[in-house]
Length: 313
Image (tube, rainbow, N blue to C red; front, side, top):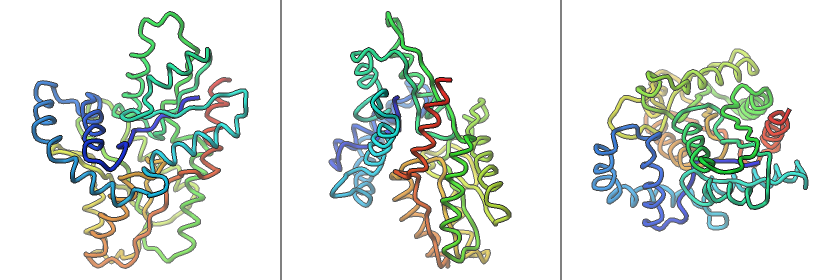
């Protein structure tokens, strides 16, 4: 079994952050501009300046004991799944834009003569920018390989009943412990042009919210998108804009949940927990609570376990 997440800088060193950003932003699935147009912008404008700012943001969420939260929780997810599956399975994890990378882990499986492989990109909602990129890496690795294992790729799991149940139960626990006016579902955004080309990501986000709310009942909620990058038009409404407007509409206590992330990371811990919190409070909000990502929750291990077991049927 191979679990795959996005990636993270190796350390808080600006050069390590720059290396990570270069790998990430060089992916044509992530930035679909023509290479001749995008690469000069990346190399001459973004990489000389942005890594220092990004390193400062990572500093705010980095743990002295465990380092990057995304790497830490991905490691835990893999080890917990390994414990549940037992010795007849081999579970590894990889990152698309940092180490251990996908090719390294596929090589390790090949060396160990693994002939049946389940690959789970840790993105509940399919997008060309995430799962599509993972599929590219897998295809590049096996291109012209003499022997290819039986592959089971989980391209999307946002409708899996256990995932929906675990998400709903976690939200309900937080909702019941405080007086909230609204649940704010926030998903990582993508450029609108991707959806216009056929990327189903936005539809999958709305479906995820609907399925979770079917479990929670008639609670006030809304959906927004975060993490806009660059000048183009992205999916709306923007989470940052929503957090500015809600207090002025009398909604001063919000419970914030980010179902597109299964491990806490820069987007949840910094962008939501610090930046959007400040937008909300500075505009008159009173209570802003984020529901942690699934992280090392036993319920999420159950989701992964069922995905693996069902994929081989």
